[in-house]
Image 1 (tube, one colour):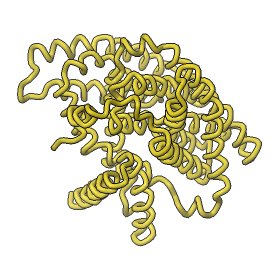
Image 2 (spheres, rainbow, N blue to C red; image 1 turned 90 degrees about the vertical axis):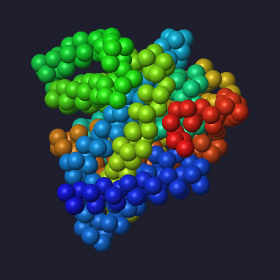
Image 3 (cartoon, rainbow, N blue to C red; image 1 turned 30 degrees about the vertical axis):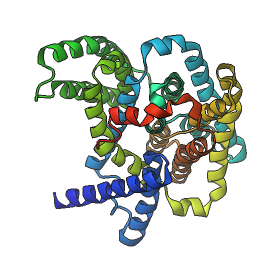
Length: 398
């Protein structure tokens, strides 16, 4: 146990340090945690060995995965059904183009420029087609856009984008068998009952010290996650749908959502973001930077050329179009998951995996920094209420 507490203290110390840096630089805490993870992991590995940082410890991977699941669930709760119904064309069109453009573009880059074999090229296209729900939602929270129709539209498009990634990964590489059918049927039944049972438990047992709602929601998320992994899918996908189904419930239960968010952002997500950064090998990037640049530039260019004209149909102001496009150009959760799937199944080599993960993480950091520094649409935020909103949502617990 001593070793576990030592590594946990080290990682949470890095999380506190990241929060201080993010405050002074005025950038997203998620991005700082990723960068800190890159630097810290490579320093520790250089002086103490490749396993000293603890990125691949089972308990730490569990905490990181839980952070991704909880953050994705919270992102789903932000999707007001009325807003999504009114913006369904925007969400669907932007989400589909946001997936197809980089999927086809990055596959072509990997095949014809890097001369990877067809299977590895398709896997690269899938890994680089994603939009990071975790990063986008974290940024939406910090800016306050999660409470605007603009931010809800971005979150909805992110979901459609990642849904395309998961489906394509399954169609091209994962076998469709009885496990898939069991997962789909069980998920439909559980998710159909989820809002009803949640409301019942809240009415009968809620607002007491037992915290039954938190236990119930966590039970459903973990149960669906286990079922998803058993079937060959990913635990994050049902978490987002579960969040969407509780959107109306969450809108009425501000304090419960605030406490849930504080636990997630304050304790769980630092493990996820720092671990994501720790997967990048600086030595591999230095040894062959051209491969990394081709993959990264391929993703960003294909995202921008595919999305900017389409976003322009729904948003007319320049800053809004660029901010929307750049936020949709991020990648992390499903990108790293897809790359790891390819590596563990022998579709890509360890070197190709390192370059893919590096490109995915760079796409989480660089477009987001540019979007927030150069194209933040301040006019969509009510500046007088911004601080109050953030405090209400549990970002500032003080």
